[in-house]
Length: 237
Image (cartoon, rainbow, N blue to C red):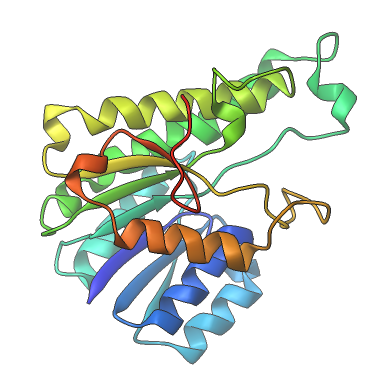
């Protein structure tokens, strides 16, 4: 049985990753979100699969909340975590115009960078000891192609900056001696039809999650520090 921890598992890609791990079998999923009491679809999955899904409260911007969730995982999973999927994230609020020059605020930019880049790093740090107990530990950052510096041609400042920072955090983690033996990668899930991606997006959450799980299951230690699209194609930093 592989132990997975997924942040932001109450909707979108996180919920679909949880659902597909259940259909594949062989996984115990710690599905986390800020407000479990409002996560109706996730709670339904947990009720139907009580031995396979454990719903935990985890606010990635709250270090006390992170510590409590990690303690719960440790107690339920014999202090071993095989896969950490840092999926929780936010997109700029308001219309497109509010994301450009003339409308930027330090508060909004700071919120994006903290939630999308700083917090996943803190979550990973908190899970390090649990990951060290796995025979094949993996950390997966759900980033975005919008975080690629080389591919950038304009767009929302805060979101691009936050995902570029997330990419850098993952790259540093991959080669940190304190993370020795843990394979850390960055992924682009595609433009996905979720609340964040919108109905006009290219692919469904089902297809994105299926690709991501296939990628995760096939990861080797030599893949650490790489940036993959959900279908396994490698992306430019």
